[in-house]
Every structure is written in C-alpha cells, then in structure tokens.
Length: 237
Image 1: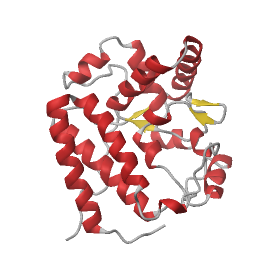
Image 2: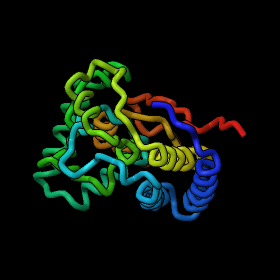
Image 3: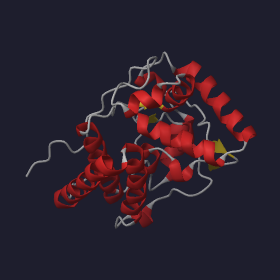
Image 4: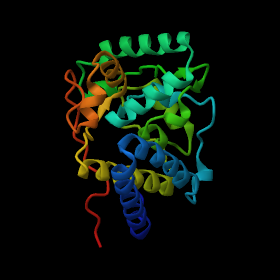
C-alpha cells in the first residue's frame, strides 16, 4: 500500500518527541522517559485523523502470533510490569512460555521468524495481558481490515500479504518511535532490536543485563540484536 507522506506532520512529531525524550532521558532516566513516551505514543495514535478506520478490536488476536522485535528498554519495562501486576502462577506460565518460544526461535534469522506463527506469551484468554506495557511495534501495528491479518496468520510463509493500514496512524506512530529511539541512541543507549521471547528470556537469565543497559553497554551477552534504521531518516524537503 503506497501513501503520500505529510512531511510537516511527520517533522512536527519528530521534533517534539525528540526534544521531550532527550530532556526526560537526561532528567528522569531512560526507563522513566520511555514509560512517559509510551503515554504520548498512545495519545498520538488516538488523535490520528483516520484512527476510526481501524479494524483492531479487543479479542482480535491474529497479530499476537506474528514475530515481534523489541528494544532492551522495552524488555525491562515489560518485566517490571509483570513483576508488579501478575500473580505467581501467571508469571510462571509467561516465563515458561517465553523460554520455550526462545529455544525455538533463537537460531532463526528474521525472515525465518516471520514465516512462523508463535503465540505471544502475554496472550491470555484472547486478550493482551500487558496491554498498557505492550511493545512499540504492537502499538504501531494495525489494519483497516482484519481479513489481511487473518490471511497472514493462515499463510505465514507468504510474506507478500500486506494488510491495509491507516496512513495517518502509520505516520504518527512511526515518527514517534523514530524520535524516541534517536534520542535514546544519541544518549548512548542500546537501540538494537531483539526478538521478544529471546530478549525476555535473556533479561531474566542474565542478572547483569539491566545494569549493563543502564551503563550504556550491550545488555545481553547471548544476543547480538539487529540495527534498525529509522523509517523517516531522510525526508525530502
């Protein structure tokens, strides 16, 4: 699906979020800045002019079986949320499921992972159990017709399926993530992408991972991560 970019709209978000994130990372720390940014992220998507066209609804879970990449700051935020809000039984189930998923995915490349359906460990009774702490990519993923998502679920090896999306929602969410990631990178923090299950498992099994991240070092000794270029890095005037 091709769209015409609204360059002033994108640049405004890039500038506003970068400056806010940069200041909050410096004053409040990277994890608090990230959690504040999540709230702004949700507000930006909710205020996009075409948000009403989204087919996404509670109980629609096709995308909860798709490959999800996260940054380290998201992993630690998710783990904090789980520790605060989950019961012992819920934590045991989630961590065991993430470990099993990680073992199946850790030696696969990005394309191979995209061709597999793997249930998210946080999907429970048809709902996202970490919805307020869900990853940035989950916040941004959407469709205006769930039929495309269902088709992707039923035929995961077909990477040519392209569900229809809402142009303004796409631009708002992507620009927001670009801006925060750039501010975090400029502050010296790791912004590489890691597969969700593998990162969760590594963060729990490596006691020093959080401290390494907050010291601006690579957090995981068992994962290399992938460099992800920002989407709106080179906008024409």
